[in-house]
Length: 299
Image (cartoon, rainbow, N blue to C red; front, top):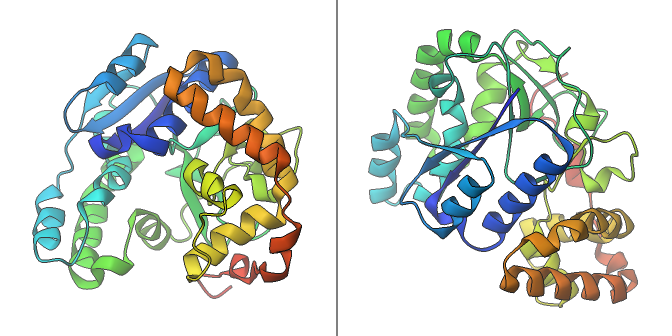
């Protein structure tokens, strides 16, 4: 099966680029998925690294890019969101397969995912924060039907463009999928979009660093994290409350460090050392994960 990721040029640097490399290395180790990257921007050393490992990089332009550019010029939106919106192009670029696998770049394959029996009408997805709540799904991992979504695309694009112009900063791709496909999506097994803050699961095939990513984790264990915002408290609380699960997740990352560049090896080696000596206890008092009860829709 084809595996799709999406990224803009800005994402080729820093922690997002490193997450992407780890995702690709783990896929090569544990799966026979054919990796395809939807990409916008100039090619560089990062894209060369991916191509050398068999990733098919597809230059892909959003049909509604001019709308985002217009809103960004007016200070009402941000061009950094383009990489996220690129997932809506999967159905436009894929013209061969009945079903394909899409993930965000911040994933790690732990074993071969069993995908053949998952054949949704449009797409299958798993919950956002609470693994027992199917009220609102996470669009970071999906098995999707390109043909069905392509047939639906004109209406979907019309909806998202109208809503972008209306809501701007409060609107993003995951909300678009949840609202437009309300009641029309299928359930994805949790093991295909397992989050570290859900605890340990030997059956999990894919680990999604949804929430705390490499940069945030590094800042927390080095006492550089900003706890004085809602976002900071939420991300920090997920990590502190489930520290042992994150430490275990990094043991899976360790196997791929030798395949990375020297600077990336040093960065992850240092981070692993800090994790192993980190004591989350002093931060426990401020932990608050009530936001995980979020419901977007009435039950």
